[in-house]
Image (cartoon, rainbow, N blue to C red):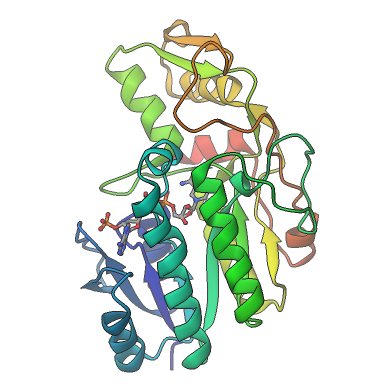
Length: 289
Ligand SMILES: NC(=O)c1ccc[n+]([C@@H]2O[C@H](COP(=O)([O-])OP(=O)(O)OC[C@H]3O[C@@H](n4cnc5c(N)ncnc54)[C@H](OP(=O)(O)O)[C@@H]3O)[C@@H](O)[C@H]2O)c1
């Protein structure tokens, strides 16, 4: 019998990739909120993860062994300006899912973010203290704290910016760069925001590593540390776009509603000791051509 996995956020960038990558090995149920998806072999269900009764009914009927919880408000600027909505989805709903995972003996894998850190003490290992500087990071950190205090079976996976094949409704940084450059639109990218980006398929493999391990927190990140600007230029060159459309700038020159930590590089050696093998950016972009 195949293990049953509940993928929340199945219509999102990561969730959609998870459904496609895991559908042959597991029995999957994908949960969406506003956008239904079609992935052959994957059943889907509409649900608001803030509706506890509805979520519990799903646990009772599907009896998942594993929950890959990717549903979230994932855009820092939106969260900054919609604090209440962000709290409801990124904190309150996580409490619901954490408690139900415990009650129904399912292993919760929570997708958190490198934005739980302030960006001043990179590279960050799993034992570093959280210190968010924007609302999104603050809410992810609050959800993490709740899980750590109440669900000892769960694993928190902190993710850096993901790139890869887009979902039908969202596609991450790579997609937004491609869309702009394809349309001949210029973009500004920060030279003073550093991250360790990860291929979305490697993120999926890492989440499964976490599901098999007994570790409370795991950093799933790529090996390469680069600025937004450098990553944008690599993407532009690989897909044959005009790099002149990308203007380098500092955070001070182009501030956003949610302040961005300066350097959120994550140390990934713990995950690697479990068999996590992030591929190089050039190999992954080649796979996308
Ligand atoms: N993408 C990245 O680069 C990145 C980096 C670090 C961490 N993360 C984390 O990884 C996870 C996945 O991110 P993502 O980029 O895949 O996000 P995304 O593309 O924005 O997708 C968000 C998903 O959450 C669902 N959702 C939102 N509100 C909901 C609600 N009230 N009830 C049920 N479902 C709801 C959406 O459903 P509908 O579309 O159907 O409404 C969608 O499927 C998130 O936890 C995010 O914080 C992502």
